[in-house]
Image: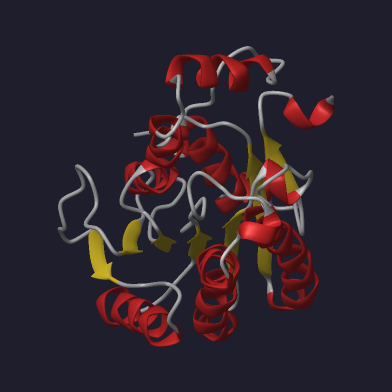
Length: 254
């Protein structure tokens, strides 16, 4: 196998929400690149059986103790953490209500899953990365962390928070040789997107409407976002610090 094919050899990665969609594709890419991968999720991974190179930990990333357990079990298994992909996310209540009709508990849950989890998991991992001399953190934000969308207050606030948390963490941690960046995707054909489609009166029309907003003329694939995450997690992006990388088919260029 080529050196490029083993670019993560000897490294250990943690992925939150890694059981499906972008997280699962990223896990597959890391495994193919020679890494050991720990997945923290409330569901077991699709098509990824636990073996000596993959660990599944049932975890609710809204809870500090679950984040610590995920990190502790990873360290028990492999002794280090080189890569953290804070990927877990929720679209919030679907269909999304207007701000004045948004229940407080839905606001809290969206912020906890999409934003607080990044803080909790990073807090659990960073001391170990500092002790071992460095690492990489990639956060999954969104195009809706850059621009707004009506009736998406909690989601936009959570993802906008991820973008600025990324920048703050990047400036704080680079002195410890820990690079932090995030990805901002648009309409990606994930299970989350399909769940939203199922609630639309005409799913085909809703898909066409989404595609019409993308200069590339199609939905994105989870693998396309995963490849970007792998780039940010690798030495190929060694000079990128605090960057929000758009993976959006041109949406934010308009």
